Image (cartoon, rainbow, N blue to C red; front, side, top):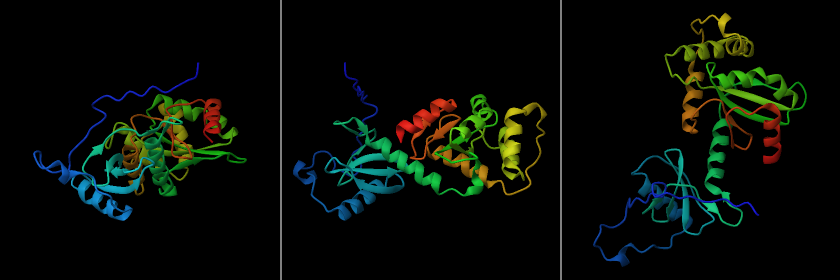
Length: 257
C-alpha cells in the first residue's frame, strides 16, 4: 500500500487576519483582488504587513497570486494586496513537498553561513570532509555530552561538526559562564571537551575576552526556532533533529543529499 502524507490543518493553524481590508459592510466589489506586477505587489505587501511586524524577503510562490513573506523572521503567506495572512505550511500536492519548510531551511543556511568563524568551535575530519553540520550545544545537556563523546566517530565518517553555544539556562547561569570561558580559551576544543566529558574536574572561572559570541549564538538559536539541545542543522539548512548517532547521521545526510 503506497505511503501517503496525511495533512491535518486545525483551525488554529489556519489564521486569517483582515489586516488591511475594507471595513465590513462596504461594497464587496471594492475589495476584489486586483492584478499587480511583482514589484507593485511587493511594495503593497510591505506596506500592509509592515503594520504587523518586520517584513523581510517577499516572493511569489508556485501558487499563483500567493506570496511567501518573512514576517518577524518567520514565513507567512498572503495575497498581492496583503489583505490576509495565512500562518502554516504550504505543500505541493504532486510530491507532497513542504515548500514552507524549504523556505525555513534557506533562511537557516543564510544565517549560519553569515556567522563569524569565531562564533563556532569546529571539529573537522583529518581527511576529506564529506558533510558539514551545525550543532547548537549546551555543556549541561546529557545528549550534547553523548554526541561529543562520539566526535571521533563523526569525524571518521567525514562529518565536520561546527558547534554554536546555546546554554539553555540563559544568561547569568553557570552553563552560560562556562560557555563564555570556553569560547575565550586559547584551546577552545580542548576546554569544550573537558567541560562536557570531565565536568567534575572542570574549574569555572571568569572569561577573559569579548564574550559576545555566546550571546550571538544564543540569539541565533532563538531566531531559528530552537526548542532544545542538541539541535543539528545540515549543509542545506535543514534540521536533522536532536542527538543522532554517527552511522545514522551519516545515512540521513547521504539520503538528503
